[in-house]
Length: 120
Image 1 (cartoon, rainbow, N blue to C red):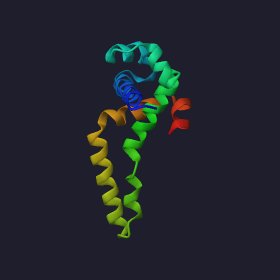
Image 2: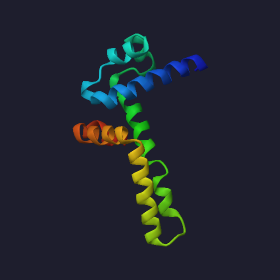
Image 3: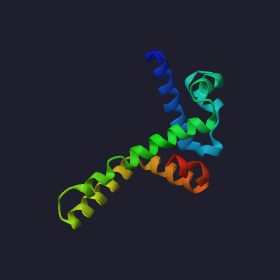
């Protein structure tokens, strides 16, 4: 894949993140994503094939943003209560910084567990 294609794909993903975070899976429209960045729905289908595949990519990235590396704190060689404090502090900081992503991940997990649990 060329740099131009990667850039276009990332542009679609970025617009899709906003659409899915704002509207959820059920409310999100590929046409809205396409209109937002000036591409056709066919271009979105070229890169992601279906709305479900695009959602899966966005949901996977959002989940990683929230939990990636979070458990590292618990593996440190410090006393247990320090680990717990550090873990809670890191989780609060991360979840506060990405509150919209937390809402998206939790809401979609609640609304569409059949879609999200296999992705998660």
